[in-house]
Image (cartoon, rainbow, N blue to C red; front, side, top):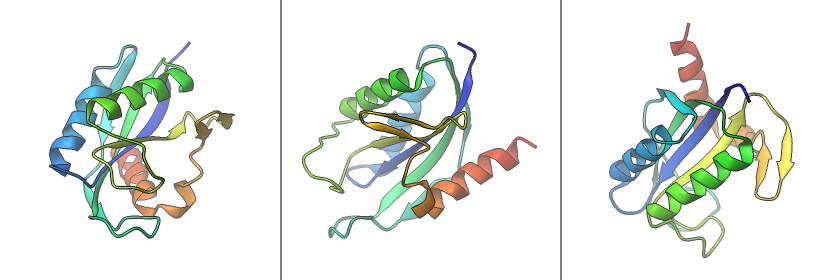
Length: 138
């Protein structure tokens, strides 16, 4: 499989948020058949979902990966788990959240993965991060 450009969003609102983003970046950069080609500026955002919780630090990454979308998802979930992520409640605070936002423009629906990510239209900070990475490549 030839590499695809994937955009993976990182977010954290528990613990040392900057350290959690760094842990996520390290994990993504270490993936097989994957090159981390860009990282956006970190942005602080209000939490989504209406729960009272701390603000998030968010960052967008660009990866060139030969991993399939399903394998990339499995790898992202493993990185989250290493960071202490639990999935007790929807929209709950989290140590680290990795979302595959886009994978080579592919439209796909699998259990646990929809591409492009259905939240992309509602998250300006994701679109700003992707735009920043795309503009940097010009």
